[in-house]
Image 1: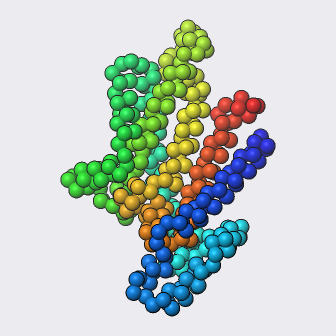
Image 2: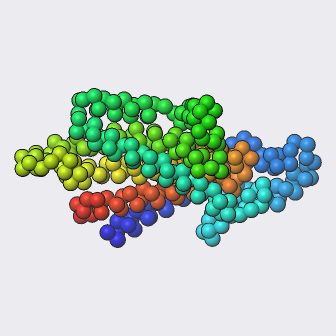
Image 3: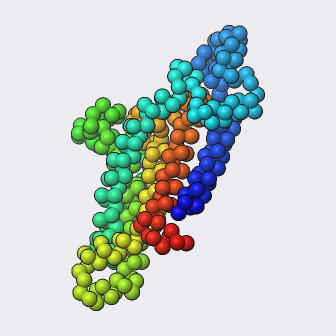
Length: 306
């Protein structure tokens, strides 16, 4: 078990290093000058040169990369170009909102997908199965950037039940969580159905039925217990995406999370904040997937012996 943990941590470190290098390279290749974004086009050349020197942008890319990586080794993400605040403090302010949104979306997805997938598997070929798969197909097909404005139009503007944007009210969480959770529920429901159907065809399930065990007990004690591995894999992947990739949803609903911060920083050419956001997203994604891999041994002890 210790060797498995060490190998996972080593692989995660390599991935994070690659992400940091790639983001640093790409962000310096995109068009736009942060100095012009801060001072405007009418600024004097002397003022531009002074600000560029103060920000360290006059150095070569190699020297900037060396300083960036040296700062990461000291757990220093740098300071924002716009207000001079530490990037870590800015991320600490935005992360709770993203975690709240991701947690609500994940809870909603599980509440929808688990019973829907299990019932669809038990009633395979029936109207319930067809309805569940139709819901799954619709949920996968509708993009967030279309579903979000549609929900705002119906529930905020027409009905007036929820705020249009922001997180000032508790009801402000409803529409963003519904936008994210619906797509995740659609994917999870299909995976749960496929996994349960595969397990229900096993010999030990037929033996349990021959002994007179109820379908509900078979489903919970036998089917779901052995169908969790692929479902757990998908949950880990989706959770990492929810925590780090809810950029579109946060932008649509003006949700003050890491995703909207990333978009704002890209528009302002605030390089340190952009690099900090992407680094945080990659760390969350890698950590969630590493924990998912380690959870396999708890769900199925046979994995730990391989």
